[in-house]
Image (tube, one colour):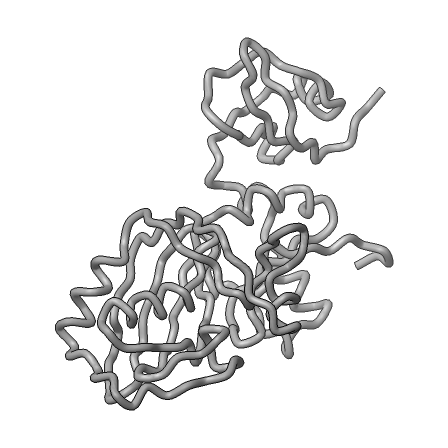
Length: 263
């Protein structure tokens, strides 16, 4: 890649976590807003019968010797209760801001503050295995959901405790880990082979196909007549992604322009 090529990501992973991290290169960095809010899938492992002040293995762990571990049928039933849309309180060790400061910075100073609960969406929450004090889960959820909080809340509902010991992100929207490259294997040659076209990155958005004569107007960021679509949609010509537009009243206005303007 040329020097000073812009590179961005669509959401970091916790230090404990592994898995899919979507990188955007060059003009594609302008599309990050459409990727960060996509649903995500994870596999997670938890230790039951103990709690952590960070809700994961990186925190201070306290055993709960007097708590009894739930039976597997009760665990499966509980996961079903934690699906849908509900309120979730973010953990202290998180990047959420309170009063303009990240919560994890307050946590490191030994401070705890009241956090406002937020609505999250959990589409599926499946118990994959359960052996003694260890449970494995598969979770599909909306953006902003904390899996470690989900597991801690699940355990609390079963009158015990749990903390996350491993977390792996397996998908971001339609992008799956099968298409990913391990960071240790990344090289300029492999990078070129694995680059996903911009039109595929936002392929989930509705499509408006324009004629060649309409191209220059879009590339110069001009407004168009409304297309009668809700939300953002991609504008293409001849198989090339030109821009992302949105209808506002009787006009379509550009949110992101990706092609070069012409005079």
